[in-house]
Amino acid sequence: MIEMSLARLAEIVGGTLHDVPDPDVLVAGTVEFDSRKVTPGGLFLALPGARVDGHDHAGAAVAAGAVAVLAARPVGVPAVVVEPLGPSDSNAMALEHDVDGSGAAVLAALARLARTVTSELPDLTVVGVTGSSGKTSTKDLLAAVLAPLGPVVAPPGSFNNELGHPWTALRADRDTRFLALELSARGVGHVAALAEAVPPRVGVVLNVGTAHLGEFGSREAIAQAKGELVEALPSAEDGGVAVLNADDRLVSAMAQRTRARVVTVGLSSSADVRAVDVQLDDQARAEFTLMTAAGSVRVVLGVHGEHQVGNALAAAAVALECGATLDQVAESLGGARAVSVKRMDVQTRADGVTVVNDSYNANPDSVRAALKALVTMGRSAATPRRTWAVLGEMAELGPNTVIEHDAIGRFLVRLDVSRLIVVGEGRPLRGMHQGAVMEGSWGDESMLVPDREAALEVLRREVRPGDIVLVKASQSVGLWTVAEALLSDVQDPETNEEHDR
Image 1 (spheres, rainbow, N blue to C red):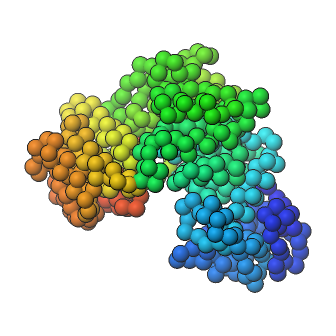
Image 2 (cartoon, one colour):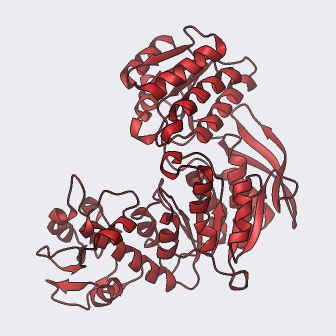
């Protein structure tokens, strides 16, 4: 963050100083919401939550070097205190976190601080990415393709809500040239609020799928929410650029909702930036020709899954708009690897068992994409390999949840996945298991087990060298423990990671 005095910080966020002996003291470190990560000269966010109240850790944060605390009440150490918000404003700020009016006030103050700081960085280009799936992977690719053009700040993992979004923005300083952010939504107005906190100049909409369908009710409602990003962009005359997926009709229709210049990406021949001659290797890594108005170049991706082609096109379009050459884009995309954890992380044990840890989150679209990658890896080898899908619940699908889980079970049979382990209890998971059994007249090929321990027991007993195991579920299931346990079962003296091409 850029340096600023506590007096000015209080003015920006609309707070008052408490227990501050010197209002001119500078905040010169990072902004943190975890007191254990406070750096000297930093600012600590005292967020009250359901289980832990950050106000209780204010003293420890200052002792660790924080200049002050951004809080909703005096805490006995230097603090900028903001007044709690009313119920309506609190609901507007609480996109995901379980916070009351006090917590909402701190989040609102954080948003105001982020907006001011980023507005005072004239050389900074803010790029926002949204969509039902692929945001984090695309954000990671964006960071890779923009890096040759100047210093880039991007969030670790999926810091894409009302806390992580401004927290990431405040990592930018006067040397930063690009800020690559992802924006999530669990309701109409959420993307707009995030875009207001950190106004983007370039906006990317990847797709409109079925993630959070239970909360939105329809894909059209999801499109309404995702399109808030392109509505927030500046005009074409002021440098605004909207990168839209030409292959998704709900996304391409957003061109009518923005003042920005529109650049389309996709496999469609009408796309401004498109991929032709797409090929996959035996690790489901794509190679394609990138076609643009400026020419073409061959791209060989280092990340896994055919779905990464669309993500790479979006990243390429942004980089080209920011001044990158085609050769720079191709080289950067070729060198990019999975950065955020538990997303198509492909590793092979010493005994030849490959584990695909894609367990950070799941919705019907992302599960289908991962299953396609799994099958490609199994079939592309000189000797076909057995494929295992270890799947847990896909959350937040609303009244369609049983239907969607049943469809996934049937889909993987049609793909000819060798074995399925459905992990957990409840109607949706029984539906996935029964869908697989009914589609393929399966017997032991599909198993329904109650928990992660039972799934791991089956895998340890039946997986053999050469098999490929995909692990995927919504984050709340915690299925990554299965992937991590499988990888730790066989010790390899030399790291053998399939993503090290």
